[in-house]
Length: 463
Image (tube, rainbow, N blue to C red; front, top):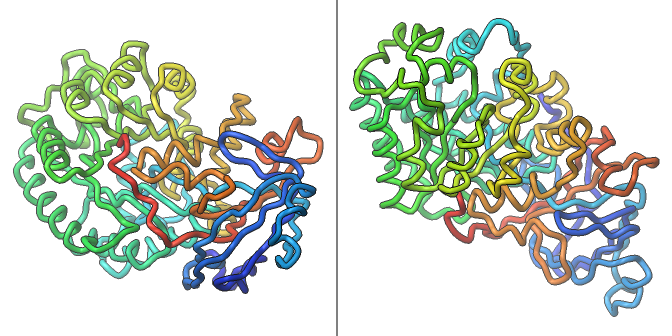
């Protein structure tokens, strides 16, 4: 567990009307870098929250430039100065796909040779259906997210009893995070009608619970093509269209999923049979890949597709044509050994085709053992792909996932006149080729300096 005795941040004494000048080694967002950098902030409102070490501020960036230019601003002389000259300033970050209700399970060693089904069984055994335990797990996930500089998430409210699922949403509502809480459900084979009915009940209750919230939205998540049949997907799309809700699903995650959908066989079929979820018009065994299997669904409404670990060129063309977006979880992909079994993740090919891609964590279960002490964030996902592939794109953890969730991407840029959703400081390697490379080559943790409580949602997004 992350200690409740959080280190204090330099903005801990912020109060309305205060002017703060932060001097940093660099200020970096998805579009530009300033180095060295000074930022002048005007604080409009301030509060605290027990789950966060950082204050919750409504603040405007009055000026952001090299220090000499900020010196000339009329408010600079009276501003309180915060010295972060050894650090880089980044916008707060967005985790587009996570399972906060599994936080209590903690990091687990994954056996790539054992296959995916034993891992599913482990999660099914260890996940909690007790409402209070689910709430505690989500609260801990919120705290770990904030500790790593994440202020917005696409959280999967797991497919369990209605009371427990509502408990996950209630915990989010009581947190400082902005979030889309996706109501996840299973509905396939002989249990299609039952699954849809339960999902509809949970969806209605979730919408009622957060009807007045400006920070939390509800979405729908048919779990995956192997656990939701065509009729379940059509129901989800119809409800999402009627209610203007975002839709997400797991897609193309494992070898076992590909084998089941294409050939109707393998360990995943045996698993579904053991649960009484096999049978009916599931559409397996026609030689299709997961995106082809969901083609008519994808053509109906843009979806946020999680994982998508293996794609052919025609699959990528389908995702691009239908407005889908992808949440790629690099550390989960590595933990399962997918590169050896499925090949390199196609995220760069997706980006080249114009498909929005965000980096995400998935659950804590596939993250390193250091996560409870370090925090659960997406900067470390970007660091993995930067070191492995040379990709240095801060938009993959800020503006793009914000857009996917229907948040205003401008709130995840650092601009004079802007009101950021939060501000993060982290270290830089001194000998790197530029400040962003220095951040991505560093192992320094991300420290949230502040987050904002003001509404960041602007629309439905691409999800």
